[in-house]
Length: 417
Image (cartoon, rainbow, N blue to C red):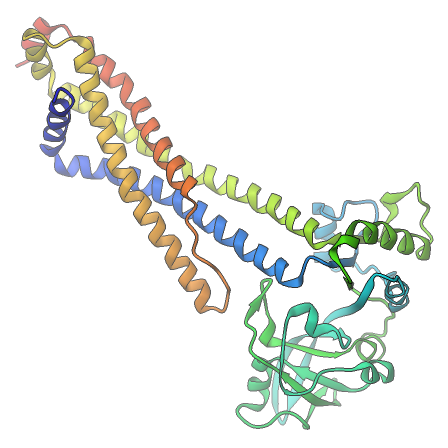
């Protein structure tokens, strides 16, 4: 019962100024809601990326071109690639050398470009993958109409193309596409297949891409011999560590790079496990940054609590003096104002968790409506941490006004009436 009295008193004091209290609580709701939404969104992104990488399988090693003298995960490498730096040393012969290893099941190679497609006056610019017969396994895609590329197409530099369902509908509408010709650079390419709907995959709209034989894009469209990537399926993921070492050694030797100069590597060799680890680190760093930014609103809410507590002390000076005169101790007075600050922050935290969870859920729904496989996730620790931090901030910012109230002299306080 002793604990209920100060709670009732605190609730009564806050209820006398409903608008002022509501505005202060609103500050905490915004702060907590922002933190919850960011943490839930971060978990959603992490789950999305993890699911996407896992869908490739754990028995895959990817080889990509890399800017020499920089790390494969460095900002410099990403910037160089984004600015169009062309590394021309990775070839089909490299991929064939890797495929000869006894534990390698198959290898998919690729070169990515962009071309304008035309069919009877309908034009569409689309991403084009120069690839081979193993492309469908890489991206977990399925042929909906016709058939996919085979070795004969690759060996003969055939002018054939497989369309994503989105490109097919832009060019052909509801009519049949398989067997017809589309023009690329005024040359006919026969449509041999149309993919089933896939949606967004690794941030890329796979319904809007096209596939032609890698040799065709190399020789007839781009005039090059190199590749962008080569992905290898191993017979078992127990070969991953061995594969990384042997892939690196084979490519180093073929590219004539001295063993003592790994900085000169113009390629990177990465397993799916390593890719998942790197993405976890990157997303974790981004989440922490966003949480830090969102937490600023919690500090603002704390300042609001300090302000309302100071105003409350000023308005209730006579009440404080009266309570001290009838036996209340300084500790009783301080605890009273701390309880009021705690009620504000706890109430704001509870509502803020609900608001943040709702916003995170709406974000997931919107993402799913755009074809992104985003799962709503609200980590329990995010609720515990955010509520705990909010209450702590409320008590910290409410402590000084509470101490000031506790120090008031009862006689001087009673004179304020």
